[in-house]
Image (cartoon, rainbow over all chains, first blue to last red; front, side, top):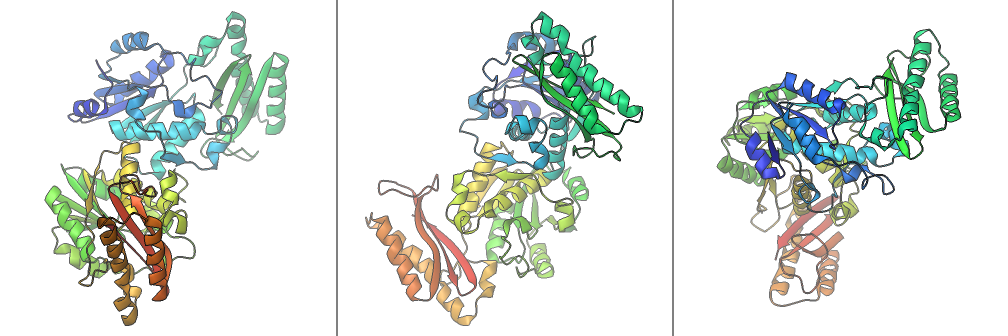
Length: 274
Length: 274
């Protein structure tokens, strides 16, 4: 496994590869990432993982500085995973000058995460576009845990005619249902044990809709109030069309319920397809 | 020479090519375009020319509908030029759904042409990005006639890490100095004979600066007033740093003077490096 920090060295190394599968990460790898890498290994001989904490997708007050950086452990984990190249550029490599060319996104980037983290998806889409251009993969693998991100990346690929196929991977969960996330480690023991309530809440909504419940408004409101009673601050619990991510109507099929909520200073997100 | 309208057929045809040189055009080809194609032929075995009148770069009141479309003559001209593929998609191919992912550009896109044609460079940059992603050329050739466009495309390539080298080609001029342009054919005989005054005006500024003149403001103002006396409506005559396209200071080296002006309903642009 090679660790490469430079773009031209990377391109040199990739120039002989026929099929590349790419897994973009911000490091601090957990089993959720490793599942993406498993998927990548099934798709191509050459698997490349990027590790880069992307400043563009953090708001000024967010956790860019305290975001967990565990490069050595990450590389140890990756070297056991048949990864050919770890691309770990520093900021001067990806942003030698301030990033002035950014993507302007459609309204779906302004709801859900985009409403609570304005500019987040612009930052994500721009760095993903840059990484695709650098790596030119045939496949790129994204987790469904970041459901709206996956939706926006897919749309970007279509609308900008990018020559890459986006592969979605199921969310990996702890035994109690909590979706794995680097931010889980901000939780203390009591919070960690409470954290799975977000998943349980989404699961209850899924079960109720599958049993014929159509009053999405009520389902959302009672879920929010239940979480609040247990000390959560809820950004949203919201039922959407899967294909467009627009707010769902009672008549829609193929739904997804998405949630984002805070336990003290830690913001968790999750979703379930219905 | 193949004429291809479909993206997957194009990719199929290009998949075996090692080095592609790409010349994007809006058709209505003249000697200026042919010079770009000559340049492309010197760079790569496979030359591909796109013909697509890009709605995104026209303002609502501009000449999108009356822009000259001469597809058959264009193909005849190209078949004599060692062009391997003409990519001529219709709008449904490049915009199967309304283009919602666009580029957000830096302030240099809001001066000069960008000031008088708001959104123009966003439309140019977005279509160029799409075409690069579809064609994945090693080289793309642009004329210096559209100097600010060339600057913005170069910056886009740097900032988005696009794997393409941008080649600049000198402006091709008529015997009297008028820069060749598809819009020249909007001119009647009297206007055509007047049109070279724009070039002569820029040339006079260049000569004066080369002779030591440093008062750019006065040079610009007297050029504008001279053109106005001859019936032109001037958008700008403006002296800039070549490398940044920022407005030039008296101490700057490596300048370019750019101009845009109307003869009746026809808008002409030109520039000269100093």
